[in-house]
Structures are given as structure tokens and as C-alpha cells.
Image (tube, rainbow, N blue to C red):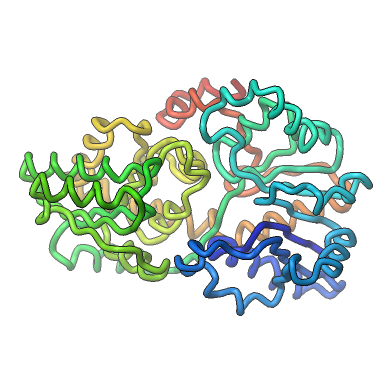
Amino acid sequence: MKLVTVSNYINHHQIPLSDALDQTLQQREDGSSYTFIQTEPMEEERRKMGWEASLKECPYLKFYYKEPELCETLINDADIVIFGGVEDESYIIERLKHNKIVIRSSERLYKEGTWKAISPRGLMKKYNDHTRYARSPVYLLCDGGYVASDFHIVRAYPDKMFRFGYFPRMKEYDITQLLHHKKEKGYLELLWAGRMIDWKHPEMVVKLARTLKEQKVQAHITMIGDGPCREEVLREVKQAELSEQVILKEFMPPEEIRKEMERADIYLFTSDYKEGWGAVLNEAMNSGCAVIASHAPGATPYLIRDGENGLVFKSGNQTEFTELALRLIRDAHLRTSLAEQAYETIKNEWNANEAARRLLVQCDRIAMGQPIDFEASGPMSKAPIIAQHRMYGHLKGDHHTWNS
């Protein structure tokens, strides 16, 4: 099989999956191959965040803007093309015209609200890009729990949508030993990391710190990141005299943040619907953190089973967020149980090697014209259609929310 991924640029969240696909296909004896085609140079902001550091280690990587003719040939001659992260449809238009297999990979359409679905211009573009291929060999990898519902609104990819996402590099630990090391530091550590922008809601963590101080709760919070909200966070920490409760650290490379996660007991994930996925959730779970996650980011519905491997709060609900944090701080047994199950979720199911294996199984079936055989759960299982306004209830246990 010749498999090609086309995206705007590769990043450190995509490299583990691409590595796994490349290595697996190279092991086949039928000339199978994998190529990742990057269509544009990486943004300077992403380079500063360390996203470009590992590109020299990607032998399968090609650059469309450097070798357009070669890349065009690779795209047109591939058995299957995975296409995502690119607004320009011209890269795959010839494949679509000739009914060649395309697997789209997409975050949600309506991060700012499904009300945008009523735009006539928007609906026409969605029809041209997606809906008209309902009966064609075009499939969808749903990079987040809200993607299937968004595409269902425009009647695209009926019964051809798979759960998928991003798969940061997985680390294997002795989870018992890792949790023991966390306890050895002698205090309880809560962690938040990310760009300090409004839709990631760092202010919720500062408000939590105020409550912990008022109630004399012994716990420490570390916040890592830069961004336009950082000065406001610093000001609030200073005004509330929270310097003993909260430490703010500037941006760190991904590997340094992972080390912080390995020390942390609880991870706080506060983003709203504008967070298409949120790979910090994968990383925190892999690092043995007990997670408190907003229901709104795309990763939460796929990765978190409330009360089993993490706790879910309604996005923006400070009261519920604070109550869950206090519950976890006071309940060591629950923290340990959630952390262990979070680690097992990533180790056994939501990791790059397992996602690549399942994706290639499905690609082989599709290429041979066989019916889709969805996985029972995890990557490449059937993406459930759950409306945005019903997701919180579904995650908290109200399962009468499907296909609505």
C-alpha cells in the first residue's frame, strides 16, 4: 500500500503516528510506503515552541512548496491519501474527480458555535467540500468528540466517520513506581500548562487558588505558559497574595512540560470549545496525573470516562471545577485510581502505535473494497453523533443523548 498524508505542516503531536505508519509499512514485502507531505512552511510561533526540532528525523517527509511536481505525483498515485489541516482543496481535487480513496482528518467545523451552520455561503462550501461525496470513497477521521455531530449537520460521511485524534509520544512507566515518586516530594502538586489565551481559561486556576488559600487547603499549583493573558494572571496572583500557592513558569519545550507532569498529582484542563483536541490531556494521562477536564475540548469525550480515568466538569463552571479539585485533593485513593486508569487508557488504546495499527487495518479493508469494520472502542471505532448541547450530560452519565 502507498499511503500519503497531506497537511499544512507536521508537528510533534503527529510525528509518533507518522513514525508508526512508516515503520509498519516498511516491514511489508509488497513495496508499501508512507509519505507525509507538508504544504506550507511552519509558522514562526510554532518554531519557537520547538515544533520543528524533530523534522530532520522524518525520512518520509516531503515539502510541496519545494518539490510540487513530485508531491503531486505522490498524491495522485497513492492508494489512499489522508488529507487534513489544509483549506485548499486543490491538492486532492484530482483524486476526488476520479473517485480515488481519500480519508479526511478534521477537527470540528463549528468551534465558535453551531449557529454558524446556517450561513448560506458556509453551507455551500461544506456541500462542495464534503456533502457531495457522501456516496464516494471518502471517509472521515474525527479529531475530537464534536466532529461527527458538526459533519452530521451538513449530512456528510454517513456511517463513514471514525474516532481519531492526536497521539503525542507515549512513555512507558512502572505506574506504581511513578505514583510513588510523586508522593515522595511531600506535597500535593496541581499543574496547568498551555498558551495563556482567553479560551484556555487560566483565570479559572487562579480562582481555584483563591479558594484553596481561603480554606487553608495544603496544595501547590504550577502554571506554565506565555500569552496575552499572562500579565493578567500575574496581576491577580499578586493582588490576591497567592505567591505561596501559585508558581508561574514561562514557556517550556514539550519534553520539559512532560517532566513537570511526571511530578504533578493533578492536571487541570480548562479549555473551552475552541480547543479542537488538546494533546496535553493525552500527555497528562500518560504521565499518571489524575485529570480534571472541561467537557468542551475535543479530546475529553474520547479520552475521559468520568469517575473512572478522570473527572469532567461543565466548561466554564467555576463552582463544579473547584468542587472536583477539592474532592481530588482530599481523596488520595480516588487520585491514585484515576491516575492508574488514565495511564492504562493511553498505554493500551490511545497511543500512536495502536492508532496506526487500527488505521492500516481499516485502510487495507477500504482498498480491497471490503465493508467497514469499526473497532469496538478507541481509535477507528465509530464516531458517535452527540450534539454539543448534550455532550456534558452524556459524559456525566445521561446516555440518552445519542444521534440528536
